[in-house]
Amino acid sequence: MSRFKQIRIKYFSQQFISHISIIIVAFLVLSLLFAHYVGNLVYENKAEELISYGEDILSDIERNPIAMDQIINQYSNVLRSRKISFSMFDQEAHLYAVGRGGPAIELKPSEWEKITNGQTIIVQSDYKRFDQDGVTFVVLPYIDSRDRFVGGILLTSPISGSSAMIRQVNQFLIYTILIALGVSFLLSWLLSKIHVNRIKKLREATSLVSAGDYHVHVPSSNFDEIGELANDFNHMVKKLNHSMEEISALENRRRQFMADVSHEMRTPLTTISGVIEGLKNDMIPEEDKERGINLVSQEAKRLIRLVNENLDYEKIRSNQIQLFREDIQLLELLEIIQEQLSVQADEKNVEIIVEADEEIIVNADYDRLVQILINITKNSIQFTSDGTIWLRGRKEQNATIIEVEDTGIGIDPSEVEKIWRRFYKAEISRTSNPYGAFGLGLSIVKQLVLLHNGEIEVESEKGKGTKFTITFKQ
Image 1 (cartoon, rainbow, N blue to C red):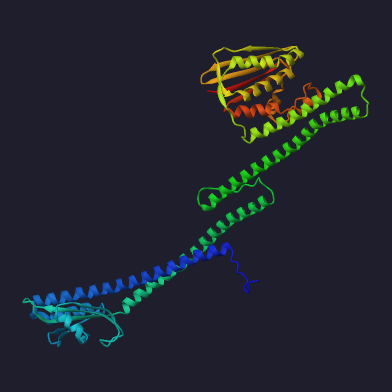
Image 2: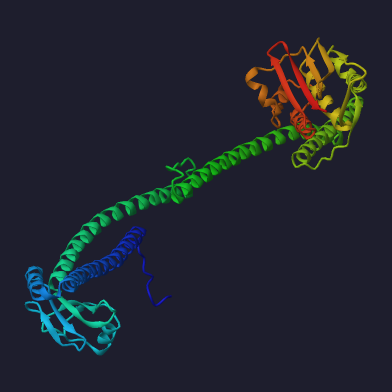
């Protein structure tokens, strides 16, 4: 047993936590980037403002050096309202013009080197120089008309204004983040709830299926993977339901088959057993012994026929029958069927008429085609008395048609489709069938026709006769 109990986290919590975690991380990253961007933007704007004023001062002094004091005073008054101070220095770093409150020059060697090379220095924030709490300052070189470095100008502005602006922006940013997080919490909760409810429905449906209910249906769609899973689930349940119906039908057929076979076998076995007991105990008169032996022989043949028909049916159903197709003259074949069944037809006072042209050819397995026509014609003789049976053959486009029509008792329209079932005729054979048919003939017929890639149809009307139509595509 594990020392640690396995921790279970509900899928809803997993979804909710994952959504919120992603949103929080995204907001933090975006907030830091935005705050950094806004800070840089504010300082850059301030630096650009200082550079612009510095260039204006140097330009005005260069155009009118005599009025330098007046220019410095004017700019001092203007820049004071914007909390900007400036100082001018020569090439030796000595101050020679200072605006009101202007700072002393405090440049590092590296900064002085850049200035003397004509480069502008920009420092966004500095807390150590110019006797102020923190400033943004720029230093512009002063280059005369001969491209000589003659000094420069230093402009400073306290960073408190810029910092206040940045703090205000950050404050609004925090409010925005909190509102967005609140909305995100709500949306994440709703989305997670929806997904979990859809999964719960699938889980409940699965429980019903496991309990044996195969009529479950869950809402499905093609919107996402859960919807596709629901589609697959419904398809699976539909197949399971169909399979269970087939299993139920097969079970019913199996029970019916066992009952029919038991009945069919019990009758001849009872007859055989009775005759043998009579012969064994000399209970049958001498003149009736031969008749009893013939009866045993007939019943034994009947049992063999039952077994053979079942074997044939199973072989056909499992595709163990191999067809040897050949071209067969249909008229000759129908005449053979007529001749073979003439005795049985005469017993019922039935006339068999053959109608077919000599040139009609059918491509089929000879033995199996004979089996098909014998079964159908026997069926017609069985249910026809004092009537007529027609064996017809005709040629149509890309097909050969064979018809077996009788003037017998016919079949009720509601029962027509049932004649192809195994042992369907067992009930009839038990009561009124003088030939002891087992009801397997027509089932075998249909399977053999399908093996030939053919079609078989039946038309019947109660009391007026039946017509079987077989179509072999050429």
